[in-house]
Length: 327
Image (cartoon, rainbow, N blue to C red; front, side):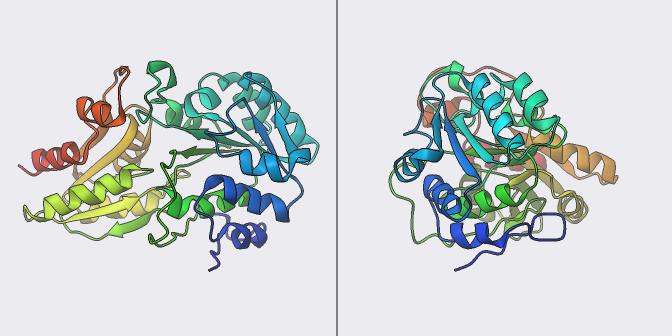
C-alpha cells in the first residue's frame, strides 16, 4: 500500500517518504524507513531513546544518531545548526520538554529561520503517570503561536506513518505530537492517509460535529455511538492537522450542524478548541459551541483513566457535553 502525501501547497516534495513509511504503524519504524531512503535525515535524542522509539534508528544508523543528554535546549540549537548545514533533524523528547522547556530556542533557532527541524514529542496532555511536571497541557498553544510552525497530532499507529511522511514533505519546522502505544499496534485497523491542512471525517452525522485529534479520536467515536442511542447523530472529524487547520471544513461543519464541540487532551485555552472557535467566529456561523478539554487547571499525579475521569476527558464527558448543548 502506498500513501500519496500532498505537501499542503499543491505539490509533492518527495514521494519517497510516502512510499517508505506507507506501512509503518510504529513511529520509530516510520522514521527509520524514511531515513533509509534519505541520507539527510538525522536523529537527536535527550536520553529518552526507548520511550521515543528511536532505538530502531540508533541501532541501524548509529552514525546519524546523536544523543545529547538531558539538555533539550542545547539539542534544539544543535538541530538548528544541522538544518542550516543541509540535514533534516528529528529532535525527540517528551511533549512538555520539547516545547515549553525550549521555547525560546525553538522560536529563534528553528521557527524564525524556517528550518526543516522536526520536533517530536511523546506523552501529550494527561496521558502520563509521571506527575504535573510531565503533563503537556499547553504545548499545542505554544507551537500554534509560532509563525512557520506546523502542528500535527495523528490519531494513532494507523496514521503515524503518513504523519511522518507529511512532516518530511513540509519545507519548514513541524511539531509532531504523539501518544505512546502500549504493546504491538493493532494490525487490523486500516491505515489512514494524512494531508497537512486537511481534516478527515471519520463518521457522518447531522446534529453535532465533534472535532478532535490524537488518541481522543477513538473516545469521540465511542461517544458518538452513545449519542446515537439517544437519537443524536454525530459527525466525528479527526483534525490531525492542527496547524494549518482545515478552516474550510470547520466553516462547513458550522453551517451544516446545529452544534459543534471540540474534544482534546490539552487545555481549552489556545489548543484545538481555540483554533476551531476562531474559525467559527470569523465565518459568521452561530452553532451552539462547546469545548471539552482541560479547563485551565494544573492536574495532579495519577493514572490516565483517573486523570481523564477527574478532569472531564472521558467519552462520557463528551457525551454529556453534547447532551447539555442539545437540551
